[in-house]
Amino acid sequence: MLLVSAIITALTIGFLIGGTFVYHTTKEVEVEQYQAVVFNTIGKTATVIDNHLLTSLTNINIKIEEGQYGAHYNEKNNKLYLIHDGESELLTLDPQSLIIQSRVRVGPNLQHAGIFDDKGEIFFLISRDSNSLVMINTTTDRIISRIEVQEQPHHVALLEDSVAVTNTESQSISIVDLKELEVVNNIKIDAEPLMIVSDNNQRIFVGAIRPAKLFFIDNYEVKNSINLESDPHGMALTGDGENIIVTLPEENKVLIISMKGEVIKELKTGDFPHNIDIEPNGNYGYISNSNDATVSVIDLIKFEIVATIETGNGSHNVQFYNIMNSNTELNVAKDDSKIVSANFNCGG
View 1 (spheres, rainbow, N blue to C red):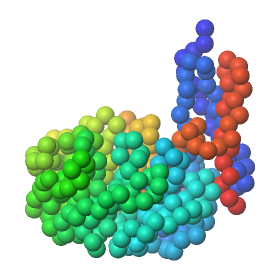
View 2: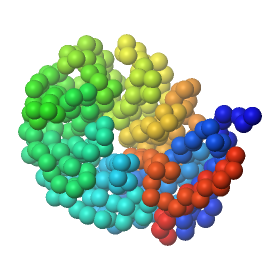
View 3: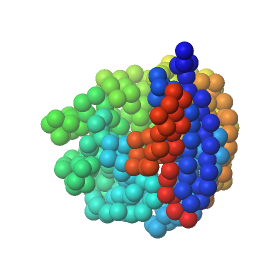
């Protein structure tokens, strides 16, 4: 009887020409394997990471001007969106070659944060200077709605039937109803909100500055807040929804905070930890350390840093591609312990 398990060997061959990931599985189990890509905003490169061996494989040049930008991968249509912070355009890239395919004129001073709806059909992003939430159809890449929020919006999070937008200048979080396409609530806080994450239901968590605080909001009400020693930046929830991960760039550390607002662990990272991106399997978090061109990998079960991976200059955020569902050449051997290989053309 076959064991219901998968032994991942994660062999990589000749990635400078085309990466090959190989692993073994059984008929009963389908393994999802992801390719991690770090986008480096100063070096204008993307670093490809083997997220099983936890090593960098290659750097790929991106033909874009220097500056902060956020990458957002849409698995539904195998498309990569790149927001160039401060510019007016949203770029779409081929996720394997990282070649720019199109440019969508959106609005002034785009923020690098963005999210998809649950079906991957709508992409939400922020135009700061026009104080608006912008909705883009991911099939046509055309704007379908612009919704005015409050002053200097910065970040966006998805809720059950709405989205939440942080407004820095107004010290508020706007709740935008996705059926009515209008703001139905503005939640006031006593700080300037920047980053926001949600559990996709009614709970949202806001990292704010002046003063540095973390807010716990449930059903549109502030339930709790805690003071932080310096301004927070990257934020994420653990897979079980029981803890919040927050980076403190000025302290070179990441905090693990419980839903009660208790700091249960502090971990040292590289220089100026910026964003944290969670592997789709939920086992690891990748923290981009912008000032020393590295990524710290945190084990989200043990809450320990398990690897530090070199990247390009100015590492900013990480995206994960499901290599079994992307447009790659798949070779499947028809036997009880099939070998699956996915080959990427990742440039020179």
